[in-house]
Each structure stands twice: as C-alpha cells, then as structure tokens.
Image (cartoon, rainbow, N blue to C red; front, side, top):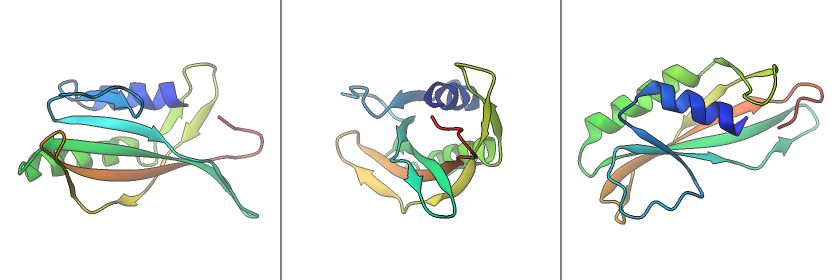
Length: 125
C-alpha cells in the first residue's frame, strides 16, 4: 500500500518532491510533501488504515499550500488504487485537514491531510 500511495503522490505534481516520514530531510527546500502511515484501527464495526500527507510550502506562501493540498485531496479522495506488489486494489477516503502550522526548521508553512483506507475482509497491508 505504501508504494502505491507514494507512486500516486508522485503523479500529482512532478515539481513537488514526495518523501516518507523516515527520510532524512535536512535542508530540503519547500514545496514538498511527506507521506506517513499511521496505526491501523480496528473497531467492532470497521477496520481501516489511516495515513497522513504533510504539505510543506515556503513560509508565507499560503496560495501554494492551498493549491498543493487541494490537488492532493482531489487526486486521492474516493480513488481506487492498485497495489504495486500484486493485483489487489484499495480505495482512499479523505478525513480532513489540520490547521496550518509553521515548521521553523524548514522555514515553511504546513498542513496535515488525513486519509483512511477501509479494510474489507482479510485485506490487510
């Protein structure tokens, strides 16, 4: 699932780099996005795998941040994606966005977009 999400994010805007949360990001220049897989949730009624996309834009450049977040939301929400490892697929649901925040290390303004992938039957990561 992670590889398929990474691939989809790379298709959205070729000028914006996509990184995984564990990638060393020292002195990267915004705009860029970071993909973070979250802890799987299992309840009595449903199971899903959440993930987040952190959008980074230069400090003060809210138009770029808004445009980037809008493109990612529109490209991923309700999209059926094929896994890279096999022929199975999964659907993505948009959950919402955080408030904007400032990351002084990158001199950037940021927003977290939250998504989830519902798990049906034995369809785990």
